[in-house]
Length: 385
Image 1 (cartoon, rainbow, N blue to C red):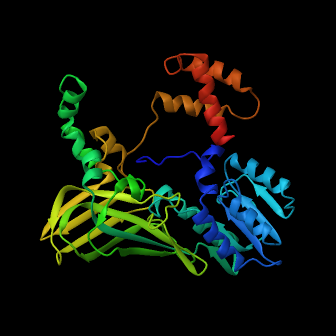
Image 2 (tube, one colour):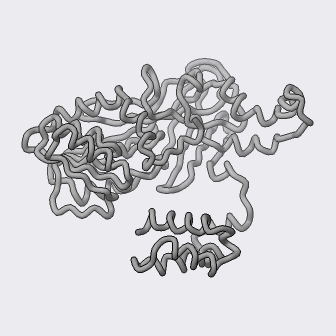
Image 3 (cartoon, rainbow, N blue to C red):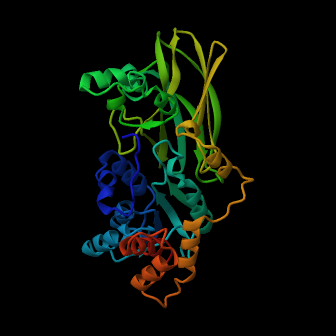
């Protein structure tokens, strides 16, 4: 789907990863090549622990499962149920993990749908520098972003052009006519994550590598790359399809969905104005994204540029623009003051219910009910206590 948002603390939400046979078989083959009876392994961002538990089953001397969410409790139970006594579980992030030893292998799934999504790679690099022994191995140890110009008329019609034709939909549904064409510009600046099957995109050129990242040496997880592509067949180019490949041991695993899909989805980066292209035409594509930043993609054809950005996928007000500036000087609003007041009193001496009652008395305009105040306490306790 387009959002592709998942809470990793929802243990049932890990199903697509645990049952991704293509991915997990490739990880297993890579582990088989490096795990010996003397090997220590860290499964970073372990989730339900599958890859670390596989390493333990393969005979690793010690396996550390590191996961910041409640999902680690499932991994703990699975390790016990399978008598994998060499497994030790830590509910922690890489940045807060307390471990006085280094490991021979770090296995991770810190790659988002288009490699850099979710901004997990900086944590992987942090763990590598703190916990990987000299001469140690990482699985995966490289990632490569790939793109190709595509014709995707049905997908483009549904996700972009549909907004301009919304009055037709109103007529079809017997609704009063409304013009929603203002939404089209926002939709054209959205990156859509979906299955290759749903996109039904026809590739107009040979896929090309945009950027490659060496996880063993990289210090930044960012992209500022461009490439020239020669069109192989005539067609109407609606945008770009992107995915990544990662190196697991001595093999590369593609997330393009061709021929077999994984739990990762390729991405569609639309053009605001589709381009009629002919075989032999040159297209230039540039993609830029800083760590924790927005995606910006630029397409050049016959001297004409189209530049789009996820920054433009939402309405922007002057107040929002000011807040996004590095020079903005933030000051707490009333809600922020309430959170500050609450955090300052979370010292282990008061029950959550009592704190909620005090919070509501101090900030009656912010919390209409006791339940709302208690929920605020719970949310902060979940994150910071």
